[in-house]
Amino acid sequence: MKPTFIKSIVNQREANKLEGEFLTRFHYREPIRPDVPYIDDESGKLVCLLVKQCLPADVCQQAYEHLRTVAKIPNNRGIAVAGKGAMMPGLTRDGSLSNRNGIPRAVWEAAGKPFADFLGFFDYRDVNDKRKLNCRETEWTGTHRAVYEAALPFIGEINSAFRTCLSFEYSVQQDEVRKVPDNSKIAGTAFTTVTVNKNLRTACHKDKGDLRQGTGCMATLGQWKGSELVIPQFGLAANYQPGDLLLADVHLWHGNAPFVAGGERVTTVLYCRERMHECGGDSGEDNR
Image (cartoon, rainbow, N blue to C red; front, side, top):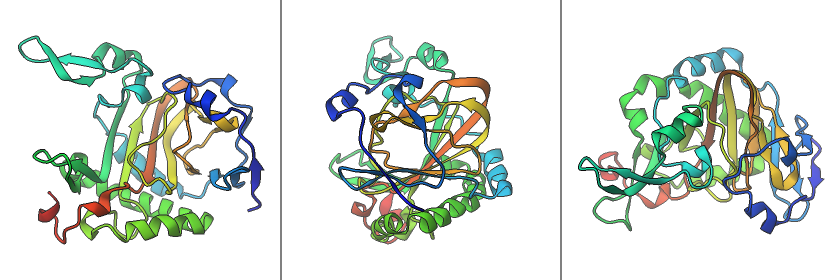
């Protein structure tokens, strides 16, 4: 695959102003061409690569039937879900303001009632010592084991495509994953965690908590129109459909264009959490 070197069309200062804004057709100039690595001409780093129809249809369908059951309200992702100002204090049982912010139900409903959750493993803050991390399987993984196991072939196919298409970036991420205890990563892959979103049009944001030098691996399931992933700093948009794989630098500003028509869109983002190796331990009990 011959790379295309591109220059940013928006400087960093202007790009930063887009945080929390919902992106539209005015924020990109061209759709991403398939099977072409886009490289930042200034830094030499990958911006994105869209690989068409590299994931088997039967594997995608099996994953869809299970991952579409995601049912957690993304209450702590205010900027991504509903833009700037969406997070505000909730109410406690006695009617006083909570010291924790979240998305009000009315705002969540106005955003289309999206759902999101995590599969695999996560680095949680220790409740007794905020300086320490507890790495363990996510709640959804533990309570819905069949969902996790049914998604493993899909995860494996994405891992294989990642390794084939971007061998250098894959090796960088794999080197970090090797530092993570076996009980805190998805076996045989370069991933520790999968974010699953359902009908979520994200406002402009950068991903946090994942490996800074890592690559976000994104795949979709379902049937819909619109909601392209927009990378405004480079004026690009990716219309990636089931069977496609989008590999990108998720530490660049990005978000979704509007849905054009109804349907159901499940997105998966596979990555390595940056601090998983700090938890240590040789058994699940040590990391819980």
